[in-house]
Image (cartoon, rainbow, N blue to C red; front, side, top):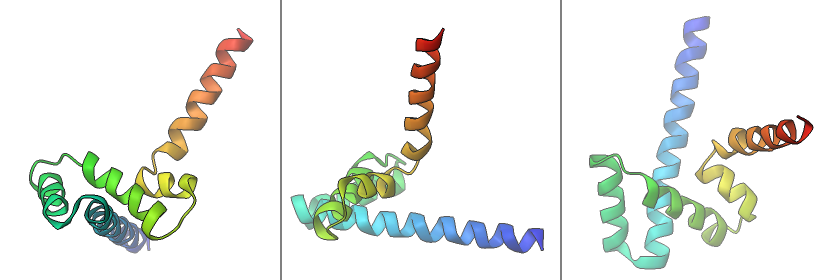
Length: 97
């Protein structure tokens, strides 16, 4: 059972990553055209530099799909859900000391 949950988890992460690549391509294409979208996708896949795709997925979620900017940011960079509370708690902890 544990192995099956791990396989399902990996499949979900792969599906999310694929969706983010598609959204990144669409977002860059929406603003800069197909050539730059292809370059951004190629750079992400070959050189593992994903910043253009991350920014493109944010723009796609916000402008193309019509999401609120906060949800678009969480879709593009889900680590923000952990970083922002951590920074806030460290600031509060620093103020208390």
